[in-house]
Length: 156
Length: 159
Image (cartoon, each protein chain N blue to C red):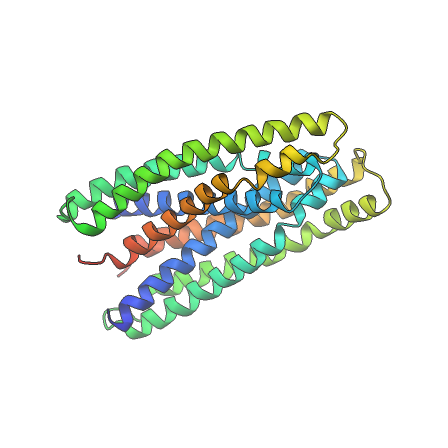
């Protein structure tokens, strides 16, 4: 495979990962502004089509990124690459925790929607849970930082 | 970091914004096509302004910083074939995206009218409007054009 093909797949993966993540964040934020469980369930359910884009894009970007770094002679111990790996590990761990919490919130919204669709305090609390919001915000910050590291490559 | 490094960075960041907006539009289209409930269509449609702002920022940033970069770099000329191809593809993508937007307007209007009238049950006309083939096709054309721009940027045919 040529360097150009690897770069294309690396960038395509990156665009899918970042695009899917931002779409998911917008949907999550929009759900917070709704009261009716059916609307909240709809928006949180809409995150699901973006999940394969985020996961597939991340895998593609990382695998092709490793390959590209090797082909172009970038040392994997370089500061900007080490920082990227640390951020990716953070995204993997925190993403699975926050994702599980959001799935439980969606399931609660779906139950409430099927049971009269009346706004509930528990659903509202879960959507505004400070820990979950902090985890989701840290994911966005990590993604932004990775994009910045990839674009500026500090120290390279 | 020199001016050209900043231009490349801003060009790439704009491309990420454009990609994010395209994914968001696809999510909204999928949601709207899967339901015939007015409240759900109206709820999803409220995300469209976020996508519109992001796509505008991304599209303008990509073309402005891209052309600026082509002028600033000695080895690239604005009239190079691959640069012209990118500009044409950008125009196709932008126009297709712009034309896709009004295709969904009747659906959103219908949903809002039904919600305002207190009709929350399934609506056949709404479902038909939501499944506009023209809107879907135009958004697909816009997405494919962006993908082709990425191909063009990497391989730079003729350079």
